[in-house]
Image (cartoon, rainbow, N blue to C red; front, side, top):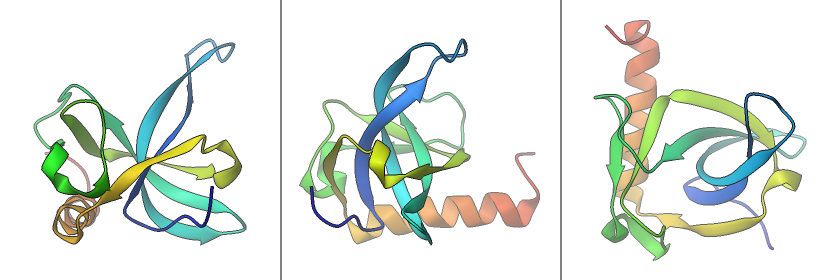
Length: 113
């Protein structure tokens, strides 16, 4: 699959609450945190909160998602690159910067108000 880079949207399995099944969903690679682990941001097809950042087809420098989606700056986690099943695309520098700034602003503010 090649090397992963920050700003890529990858597809990986998200577990259901019963932890017995999962569904493949997109996530944004924010930073390589070492030993094959990445800090990632959840991407959904619905805007679950007012802080979600819309991702359109034009926000990709290559590749895409099937529909308009939303990066959720408050839904971060780490995942090992062995879980990534494919690369959906690379966000433009502008969109990636907007999402990173939303994460930083959330941390600086101490959470959503």
